[in-house]
Length: 152
Image (cartoon, rainbow, N blue to C red; front, side):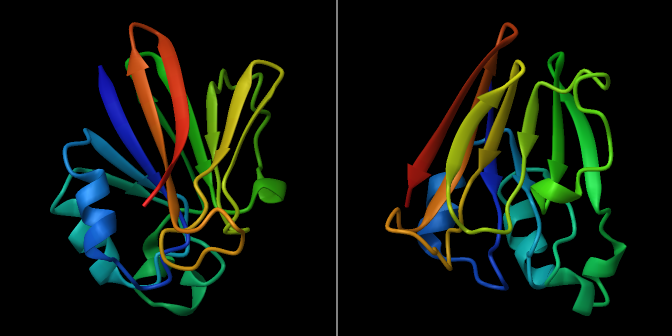
């Protein structure tokens, strides 16, 4: 089984609660608006990090090196990562995408459409809804995907 922490919109802040929550995961996916290289470094101390650039990151020289979108494969499951859902540049179905991870709104959500799971982990540092500080979590086990929002 693989556990993947899903994070977005940290905006330059990492809390001890966030680090404790993601401790023990196999991978961290950050869906943009990291805010600084230090966020990437601190999260990389916990697990390997895949990150994309968000609209806030475009102002940071280091974060300009991040891709706008990324597709990764984990145990036969294809995960597409972008910051803003409306800016997706590929045909998800024809690309065989199983999960889409996005951010930008700071509002956590999980939805399903045409066999694809869409998950916005919210924000662990700047929540914009009554949900509070949140991340997402994926568990991949023998081709099965479990997704959830975790309050931290």
